[in-house]
Structure formats: structure tokens, C-alpha cells
Image (cartoon, rainbow, N blue to C red; front, side):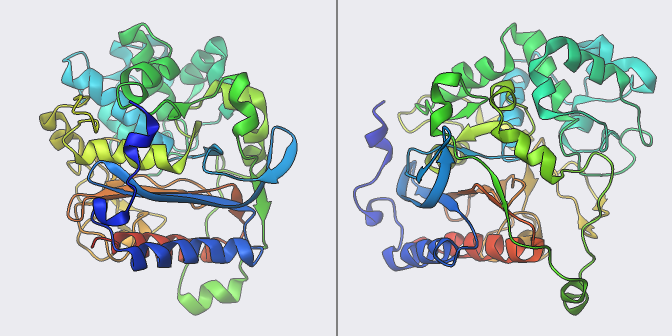
Length: 399
């Protein structure tokens, strides 16, 4: 399908309010204009089509500093987890995989060091007890090293006992399971079973060398918030633990080897428009805009069920609200701390990414939204305010 079919000529064609969409774009552009971020890209979609997309700022691309465009690729960080999860859902609806399956059924190597009881559900809900398991993004592309890591890891506590956000380790075995069941490289599986059927050729995990010049290099910006700023808000400063993302780990995403490896936890590389359209398909009962069905509605209903029950996120002091690999906004008034805005419904679903990447869909409004930036703000309070503001504006854009 030609890409132009996905773009509405006018916002009213997809039921979006022009004034509200402009307010959204103005908010995104403001921080580029003020020099707080180097570049950003955002897209809002409804009724299966992109209402509008905008890109602001400049970014190093292919070794040259140049203006970012709507064709510029951004590294979507943990927004990738939704793509990996959606790939696993395809195998579940085919009866080849179940959430209750133990990982060792497909990847015996994973069972070393007492991990035999870990299930696919544990991996997708961040209850697999390996939140700090060491590893580097580029290692995923090395099959031998990947399997060595899977075997080396040890549990921090019994699997399923508590929720702790896993930055990357839990999605490595998910991708390995996909490869062993399908016989396809995980990156190729996402491409041939999700991206191409949806008509989204730029929706990728990992990237070939030929497209590397389109990727915006990541850059750290700003200074950390001061202790008194946290105290004034009654917020606990972020806890730094072994395995946590640090500046050196982020800069690795500027290396071609890391980009090619395509980490299933953070190696997605795409545009905001492609990401927003991926979520439109999930809103549309698993169908692409042309009617081609990718996921069955029954599978999506199972995928969107909260499976962490009363488990709380210890870092945020609120319910985890984790479904099969994605986050559900919930009705407890804390949606804005889960990667959504204040205007989203309780049914909104998606997955945010490190550095302020946002991606979600809301069944109540029919809106899907993606915001990507290559500027990773050291001031996490400012980053949080930015994300909440953008998501809140986007959630209120229905006509």
C-alpha cells in the first residue's frame, strides 16, 4: 500500500481538532526552539490514518549534522518492547506458545542457575526476577554471546514474587523463543509478520547498514535536577542500580553494531508515523488499514489483560498495571506516571521508552500517538513534565 494512503489530507477526515493538534505541535516545538532538545518527531493518528506528523530540530545523521525530517529514523528505546510482545502474540494465537509455558521448553540454556520455573508470562510482565541481569545491547546480535548471557543470569528472588521493571534482560529470551519456534531471525519475524503486512516498511527492530544515514544520533542534554527540586515535589530521586541505563549505554546506540543487533528491548528504529500506525492496527481489532488482519481480536483481549494484580512498582509506589508486554493506563489517577497523559482513558495501552519516548493508543478516543526524540534529558523531572504535557494534549485532540 502506498504510504500516502495512511495520511489524511485534512484533520477532520480522521476526526481530529485542528486547534488542539496545533497546540500539541507548538508544545513539542517549544523545547527545540529553546535549545532544550536537539530534535523531536511526533505523529497523531485516528481511524486508521495519520492525521498529522511533524519533525523539529537538527540531528547528526550518518556522521553529518543536518535538519531532521519526517523521514528521519529515531531510536525508540523501550517502546520496542511493544513490538517484541506483539510478535509473541502472533505465536500465541497460532497455538505455538502460551503465557504459562516455561522458557526452558524452548530455550533449555536459560534454565541454568535456577531459572527453570521462569515462564513467558513472567518475562512479559517484568516478574521474571532478573531485573539487573548484565548485558549490552550489541551482544544480542551475537548468537553465541546471547546464549552465554541467558545461561549466566541468576534470579534475584523467586520468579513471579514481585514486579521490578527489567530494562532489557527479560526480552532477550522472548526474542530467542520467537526465533526457535518460527525459524526466523527475530528482526526478520517482526519485519515479515508485522511491518510488511501492516504496510509499514519503516517499522524496524535493528537496521541494515544501507539505512543508517537516516538515523538520528542520540545525545545527552541538560543537567540533573537538584535534590531540593525533588524534595519540593515530594518525589524520591531515581535509584541507580547495577544494570541500570547509564550515559555510556545510551551512546552505544550511535554505534552501527548496536543498531544492527536490534535489541528486542530497546533496538527499535522507526518514525513516529510508523509507530502510531502500528498502534492503530491494535485499536482496529488487529487489522491493517486495508483490512488485512494480523492479530485476532481474542488474542488482543488476552494481551491487554492486566496480569500483575495488586503488585506495585517499588520505584514509583503504584500498581504496576502490566499486561502481556505492555502497560495499561488504569483508573487510579496515575496514568501519567505509566507513560500516558491526564486525558487518557483507563483502557489506554502502550509502552514508553527511555529518554522520553512516548507511544500509546486509547480505545476510548481512537487516538494513537507517538513522540520520539534523540535528546536524552539528564533532568528527569523536566522530561517527565514534557511527556505528561504532550500525552495530555494528544489525548484531547479528538474533534
